[in-house]
Length: 339
Length: 288
Ligand SMILES: Nc1ncnc2c1ncn2[C@@H]1O[C@H](COP(=O)(O)OP(=O)(O)O)[C@@H](O)[C@H]1O
Ligand SMILES: [Mg+2]
Image (cartoon, rainbow over the protein chains, first blue to last red):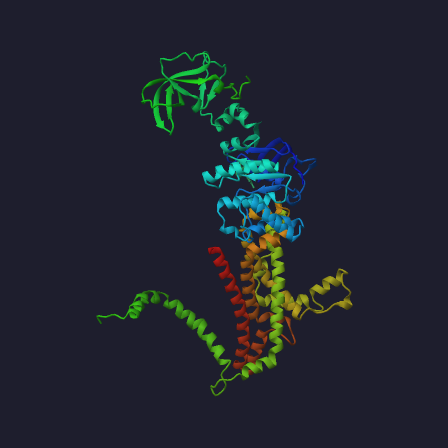
């Protein structure tokens, strides 16, 4: 099967009497890597499951390539899903898990076994075929689950938090590995994650979700620099929100920025005005974070987080400056203002 | 008493433990082991108290056919029980029509609460030549009256045993299936397996231990029920239980009855062995 595009049109889903997804429309170009990003419980898994056929839509359509798949049972859709828990079949060996999807497609035993070998090679687990699934480590299981999905050469790959059950180090490794594999195979991929760093590092396009709705669809760079609203910004690490003042370089109701963009200056040096947001304040707290210091300072009624290269004693008066390029301007409705 | 014998010391160490389990051991010995051993021994003891295989030979000569009949009926019943309970439990687990699943969940259990003797009696009036089943079939025009036949033979036994034991095995099986990780089922469907293949190739292998337990317990029940063969079957051959009762009540011949009982033990012992071996393998695999 070739690589295909996916199109969701006005998809709504009700489960157990509650509306989980509200009118979700999305188009995923063929061969792209799309991340569904959002806090826990916002409906990412439900969206993925509805594409795979496990959550019947109340309204709307799902199209894969030229055909609508919304009415098909899961086994007829041809989507390949990797479950968060991996869902390997415990009564089969590693090779059994890899070959079963091929068996379902009526492929002869010799070819099945050959393709399983190749897949194990591709996954960096050659010779693991005869192992019991129970004897694998988390990372190895994750790879086998991925291999089981890829072995059928699916038109689309669905990944539900594939890395969330792994240690941080393995996670970072697998992140790159997964992305390279996807690019090499050119397979249309949708990955669910609640980890913004993971989404930013891996995706071509990020779909930001909140409470069953799509908030923003953007490239990682755009999403990071221009989140659609204040909540989206907070989710993407915008930890400072201050009320705008008339002499600020950008006109807005509130201004948001990340603490790593907020630098401490000497109170004396105040030439920055005009191309930076400047606030004065009293240092409340100064913590070493490795490579630098993280400060909390009180500026009027607001508390601002900032970074500094040198330690600053609590109680001292400082000035913090944020370059205009790092500022995000939000209107009174909390939405990002166009610039 | 200055130099304590090491083995004696070991014994003294075990004494409190032994005393704790003594009541249980005693109960098992008195209630199970002694009667069992006695009945096995009496199968080999003649009137003068010497060893003999005469009872065993008599049992085989007179009742060999019944032993084989019993084994065949038991196997056929177990086959029917497996197929039916897998189908019901499978539908309860994978069924797509919620109201049908709910209805089935309520319906399938009720034979559990009906005693064997009542089941036997019901089967008798249902399966006879002019019984309820044939009347229904003839009245509805589905069967020619001339073709009506009685099912009160081995088929009646198999049907009655299955009817009585299916709910029990289904209960065990449906419970086990419900605790199978659902995502393994969804993964199989996602990879292209229909419901039936999912049931047979994904769900069933994960619950086969439970199925085996259900079947072995059913086998023991089938081997020991007296009322059903008495009610359902008139002539020969019949189940061993029926023949043992016959031997005891009409001839007072405990020795041959015990010899027959020996065959029951052997059959259930084979089942127990299979079960133990299987649970041990599973245990070892789980431990690895
Ligand atoms: N089968 C279900 N029945 C009812 N509510 C459900 C069901 N599955 C999920 N939900 C609810 O839908 C919401 C979204 O769940 P989910 O898609 O799993 O979120 P996410 O994957 O983004 O963490 C949650 O509030 C959850 O409680
Ligand atoms: Mg989820």
